[in-house]
Image 1 (cartoon, helix red, strand yellow):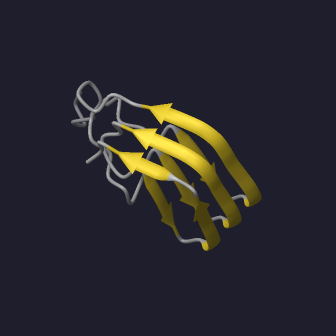
Image 2 (tube, one colour):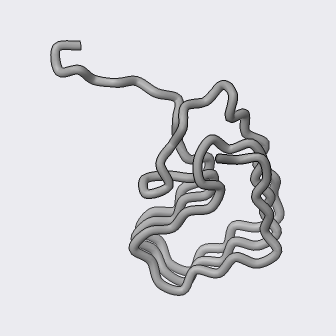
Length: 89
């Protein structure tokens, strides 16, 4: 408290950080944006990929995420195929 810290429930559902040759496929993420804090796409997302390369996100649906549904930063060769984002921010 003395350092003005903050506790939040805003977080990525799936994160891939510092990885290579990853496949995230065939799933549905049902979030609830009304009860979860907003998360900035630069630091997170429904699926968040950071400092990674050769990643495939395929047939993934993200619904009601309070932030960017799909986000990647400082990456190489990221492919989204057959994905859907709905009712997010």
